[in-house]
Picture 1 (cartoon, helix red, strand yellow):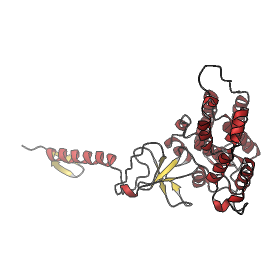
Picture 2 (cartoon, rainbow, N blue to C red; picture 1 turned 90 degrees about the vertical axis):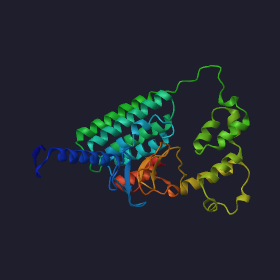
Picture 3 (cartoon, helix red, strand yellow; picture 1 turned 135 degrees about the vertical axis):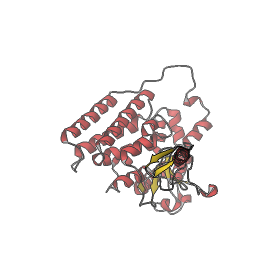
Picture 4 (cartoon, rainbow, N blue to C red; picture 1 turned 60 degrees about the horizontal axis):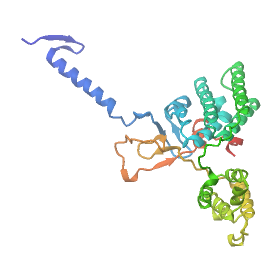
Length: 329
């Protein structure tokens, strides 16, 4: 004899109720596995991006962005350091007063971790010192309304001051004689190829200060010519010269041209790894990380990754500032 049970829908057979319940549970499981079209964050915790360039919006707040994009882990990836330094510079100097207390705590933890990593690995020391100087200057000179009490911001200033003191007292240890090859042990052709791949003129200048041999190599006009041609177009160069053939072959002329063009147009910023937007699923992720696109209607051949700069990330959250400040010069 069939057994009847009472439910919200009335009296039903127990066996039929069990079958319906199992079907409902299976639907719930499938709903968790297959993402819906209006989901804002994918299963891999990537952030959804909506809108077009200049009018974009993210599906998360600043604190969630820091967590989902794993900015703390990015500190220990040499490919992400330059991008993270520029993003942290904007957050510390322009956006810190506008974020929540949770985001402030996360940002200061990242700042302290960046300093500790720089001292531990003896790399990225100069950019980190510049970041701390700009941060302290911004926090002490800032007069606009801030989120948080005055005592909280006094603690923030004290924290940055302690970190800055710690960094100022740090000195890079000299390399001990270990019998391993140094840069100058390489053939001159190899050293020149390394110099040709440097995109920051300060690196070339500092390299020339280490010894007389490297100084003479940095005076090679072709190195500075390649550097100018990397950062600026012919149209930009023609602003200061009428004909590139007219340029003297000496390195000093190319250095002067680089200084004039960079002052007027700024330098091209290229990162080894940076945040990108998938054109199919509209999610934000690191370019060098594996990305599983969860869009159901993706066209494999038409999918591309659009780079998004630290300036764009900042503008999405806080709008475009009047000036980008010293940290981004």
